[in-house]
Amino acid sequence: MSRFDGTQLVIATHNAGKLEEIADLLSPYGVTLTSNADHGLPEPDETEETFVGNARIKAHAAAKATGLPALADDSGIEIDGLNGAPGVRTADWAETPAGRDFGIAMQRAWDALEAANAAFPRTARFCCTLVLAWPDGHDEVFPGVMPGQIVWPPRGGQGHGYDPIFQPEGSNVTFGEMDRWEKNRISHRADAFAKLLAGCFA
Image (cartoon, rainbow, N blue to C red):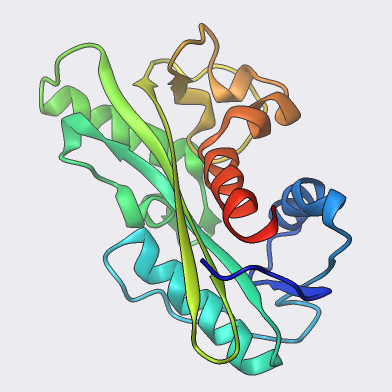
């Protein structure tokens, strides 16, 4: 396992909310964070069929372009009653001519479960894979998972994406009803980050 001993890290995203979450998690380590947007980097095409494959594309593209270590994540929801769909296409299910609409994505997921007559509880998991890449081409991989179930109708206006229909294991509220920072403490991304910090920063 390679230890991160630098002072600068590129977060390979244009998502300001994601950057804020990661900055909070890395705040004890005195690392200066920048994003793809700060370096004028485009989003590379995510052409892989796995979370780790797409995270590697993003991390290595940013590390190569900047000459700095780069951290990327790829995440999504896997629904057992849909044979793991939408998976790496989690965001694609929300695409419309006018932009992403996750209300449509959630409805699509529920309609597909109904059409499949999927058994209850309709188990699912949020997955997050973090890849920390160095300019020399080396990387370290850290997968995280939050198991739970799909519920209907959607509940709560917090979070984003499929959060209002995902009830995490051990909770009676959805991610959409949960305080943002409480969700961040237990989420799939938190699981992956705990492994990253133990592996490369501890």
